[in-house]
Image (cartoon, rainbow, N blue to C red; front, side, top):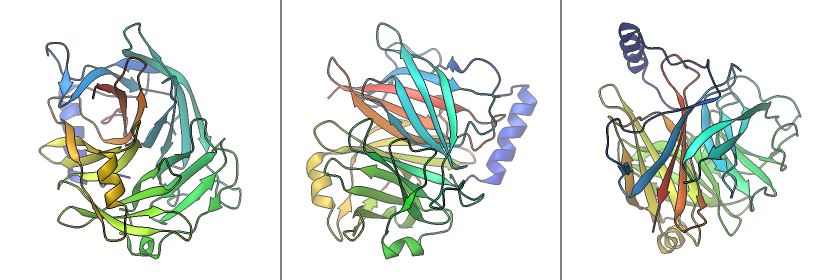
Length: 329
């Protein structure tokens, strides 16, 4: 759940009202959005080449508030979780050039707690989503904010009771609304968890391991950006998505590459993980509250990078955007 400033939301609502513009959930399940108007092709954000942006829409009032994102290896399916304890899934389509052109066939399903009942209101803010193993995977791990915890689910994710995982004692010290936004299953099976809350000078508490094996380290972000999700890369390394919001600057994002050697060296007690920025999204680009990132290898080489945004269930003033980039290394 992003820490949205009420004054920012009020200002956005006023601007949209004065302009006569409304951004709603009505219409087709997806609509194309230009990342940058009147820009010569190819459109770039740092090292990334833009490959399409979609505004996702659905009449279901629980469609929205999306956080972490996981995309199938062939790029045809995606799974996300929401701030209301829901699993949101859908299908993606592309043109012959591999440009992202459509999304639809959405499903919205409840996530259940350890008692087999829906996660309770206010304590159902699911933020991090880790796929255990390779797609379709051996199950999922989900981090919750406010009641800082990690739940383990079977492959179906929705419809089954969760198992509560043992977590580090440090989880109890995390700020109420700034818990584990980033949850990722590494290639060796360990879980990587990074807190959104800043411990000072852009340092964020982080842990790697699992029940009985957790080790604490730190992730170094670039203030005022905060880490909100991460994705594995082929051959090692990860990408970390950082997000910021400001009354004047609006939404902004940066994507950080942590290579395999840096990742390995930093995942030790007391280690500090710091990556290299490969892209930054700021206005006048079509920015939003991006809170999810995932990757997949492309057949011709390079990596597809996907971002998904959290509209905070305010479809009049915020959009659920799904953006795809190509990163050729």
